[in-house]
Length: 264
Image 1 (cartoon, rainbow, N blue to C red):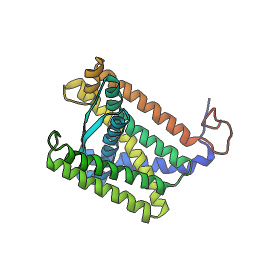
Image 2: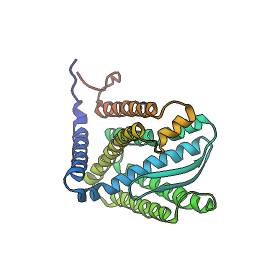
Image 3: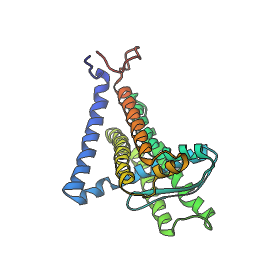
Image 4: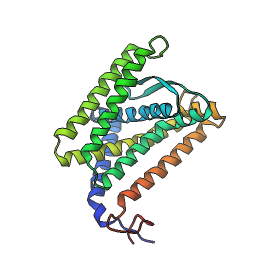
């Protein structure tokens, strides 16, 4: 059966494809040709890290557990130290990082597709980064200074990078022309989705070849199920979420038929 993208979704889909092409192009150039280009996407990688670690924080709080600190490192890795109770809480918290980043990117796609305010989405993203930075990047390490396992340098970098990201997103939403606001939001969505998938691929090789600590190792320790199995589960769920998001992105708003998101 042949499908075509709904007519009214084509402008938004074009914007998404441009953002995807630019993202992949920058990634390939920075990785294989000019490493200096990586500085252009560095803030976006940090943004995805904040979303990843922030998802761990939200899962921890929602399961009734406490967060001691959230830190982001210059190499774009991140760590959330928390106290958990029970295997089910550990399952949700450890899964939240990769799946939360994918879900965030997918929700941005749906938000854009239904023509909600791109400025409001950027305001929300700015506020989320600011909240994670202030409460869990700064205040919680101070409150848990005697037990927290982070250095002063990591706290300082987390606060500075979080403040710059939050301010940049706010400035784009407040002062940017709407075409750049829309493109910026599409770019963030693509970065979250690509970062989640690339990170899961990296996690697969790490889990297959080393014993390094990771979210998958946490899951293995809590459930007895091998870490590689959890990596495949997360990849499968992420692909499913992205597939649903892309289908919703292409659904015709003029049609009352909600069974298929594509027109014949």
